[in-house]
Image (cartoon, rainbow, N blue to C red; front, side, top):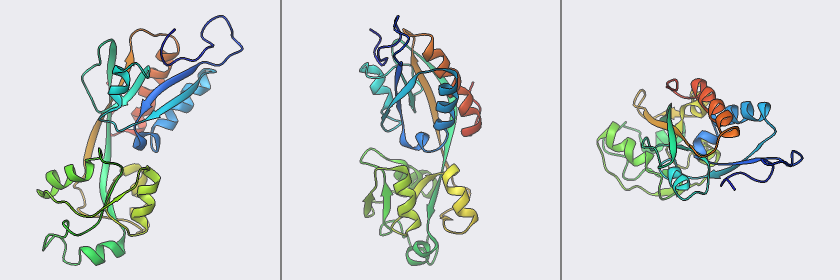
Length: 224
């Protein structure tokens, strides 16, 4: 049996194949559904999505739990092909009232040590990475742990903290003034890759094509 596929790939055409795939929550909330729709429209297969941080989804491939993964790891897992998809762009955002409360004088004095931060989970280091790269700081502010992409957006809109928000989700709220970019133009691009098992063909090839096509419009750069 091929790991990640439910019964239905054999002679029984009445049963539906299930593709088990690891994907990060931010991709699932932005560009990945378009790819999934493209795949579903061409096949009768369904997806069994396993959520994990993009830095760790490749581990799901190594363990044999999934057939493919959206990952930040460019190094192909043994027995897998790796394809560059492009970059998911993040903006450091907060609500106007949060900015007025914690950043009344901009970055002087340093407000990041006391301004609450939103984090997805203990492995989410996007906020800390942005602080290092964009601001040159290493801070340990209070944290609201919010393990959902939409939940983090809602918490930011409610003024509970600042967070790294996928550009696709943030831009409409920047346009209507409900969110503010902490440092305009200081954005963080996270390269993503599609890794898939070389042992399976057929449906996984179709899913790979759909994912790479979906990434062309949903990510910063086109797949190569």
